[in-house]
Length: 158
Length: 158
Image 1 (cartoon, chains in turn purple, brown):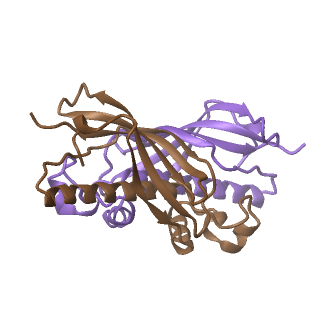
Image 2 (image 1 turned 90 degrees about the vertical axis):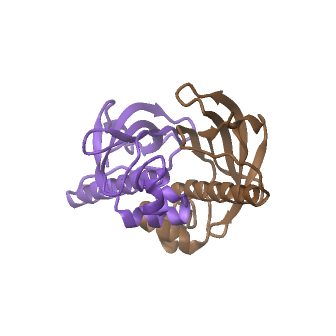
Image 3 (image 1 turned 135 degrees about the horizontal axis):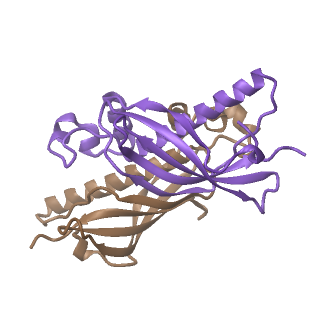
């Protein structure tokens, strides 16, 4: 969890990976995306996907989960080492969010994030804005989900 | 649930409204967005939001929930009336997703969707693509969340 000044363009981190278990796919979808190819194993077999698939919002929410855990761990490690750490703030927004390939029960996705651009913030001088490209890939390398996001990143205190 | 041919540019529908209860905000965030201003009422008081706020992915997932329910009801009504109904397919993607204002516990959001553009699909001749603009507004009219999406829409069978 470094400061805005310490980030390099093109840098890529792996946020983590996640297995989409059948029960969690169904549980998420019953609450937020109750289409039968997300909630019903039998009905999904005759859908255009041929089997149960995760809701796209589930795939997106897991990105957030892994991102938060990644930065919590990074902050903890820096605190343990007595190093001054940065902070991330709210996200101004996301764009170009594409669910490229279906995520089936049992699929393991690996989420990565790459720094595309660093932008000075006019409204918040103590923060910078980082534009980042994110991908979730299956074990065979297929991209399942991608988007570009922006986030506020704390500058090093002067 | 009409066919692609029957949709008009500029048409707006209200998908529904939803109250973000404290328990559900915490429950969603514990699973997918475990930052303390989403999971801990006391800690949230000293955050930049001043109180517990819903995860942005929660706000987005509720859009999907209301959208699915809206179209399920529309299909049911047309079936009951013996009218031939259309179908929506997968979404090629979403863009310009912005969380404009925080959503606090107890806030009621109303979600609307407006048709921006109708596009012929080159790869799927029996479907058209609809580009739609979506907003979730609070009871005082403040926009909390917005994005532009695309979705495949079944054409009328010939």
